[in-house]
Image (cartoon, rainbow, N blue to C red; front, side, top):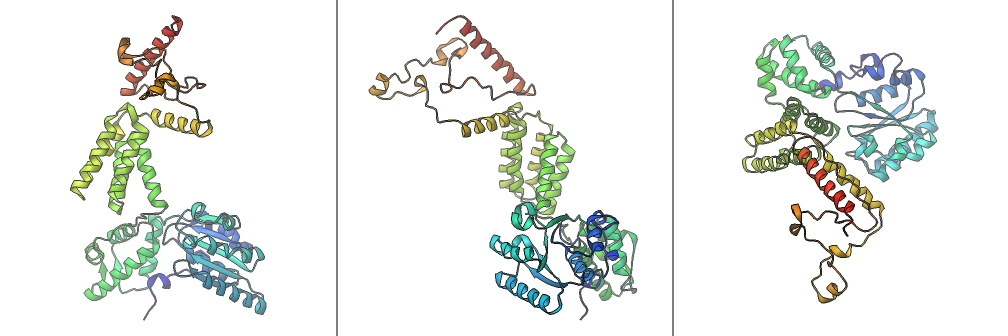
Length: 429
């Protein structure tokens, strides 16, 4: 039985690697590392199917080092110990270096990652970790400080088309028309391994049907509704939700709709998206248009009642409204300022005039005695009254924007502040 196409096409030399020119072109970091003849520990961070394992193997080959591979999904401390013992034997017998490659390194816990440290320090192991997750969050600081981090990118459309040509060159029995090549490249969404797996499926179908030309009809029949790559829990996910949020904040309804539909199409949970829309209404629109919060809550409820795909239209309506609404982060800023103030302040008592007095003793102690009932005052406002603890001057944490309804709120607060000023000027106590 022949090896999978992805394995048969694995580059044997560095110049055969497709993509990652920002790391592998002349004078770029990994090219320099290869040419130096001195391996160093590193983390290869990037999406699936972009060549992380291939680069690690080529390094071992280029440095004439022993290559030991572990998968953090399947391995444990016992496997790490056995790899270390094997490296010690290799060093004692031949003096050769060992490159230890750990795929999905972010799946190892802290103690497992710590197990590498002394052997990396001693030079016994050159550690190469591969991860699809942000190493800043998923890799121990101690291990991260001993390794260079290289960011790999998804393969471009041109990269994928080049890979299609290389794959088809193995089997001269078939040709691929131009439209089918483009569709194959698009189906991979930057993932070279996924592309090669799709090609294998199509080639099997071509053999069964005894056709010589692979066209779009055959692709659709053999691949079906293959979903594009979507990382539901990793950086691709958070990058896209960030793009959605920033498009709403930037008042661009087309871009906001694009990212919403892109995430829905890729399999993101609509309930998660509805929660994020509620957050956007509070953080970026606030009192400039209070209807935004109610509309996002209604959209979330509509989705719960209708489900997919009907309920997704309610989310789209909310996204467009949020993007078009007047923007203000005044409440968000005020809330954060107050949180910071309270976190660094002492615990201040409630002023006596604001305290409730349900008992005789409390009344005798003066609780609530000097409180002025706002509804009994002109304009239903007790001008000059204080509501903060003693020692806190009026901080003006909340600064309303001039946009939307908040512009009216700003006018109202300015009027009330003027009443306060007039009250104090009048000398009333």
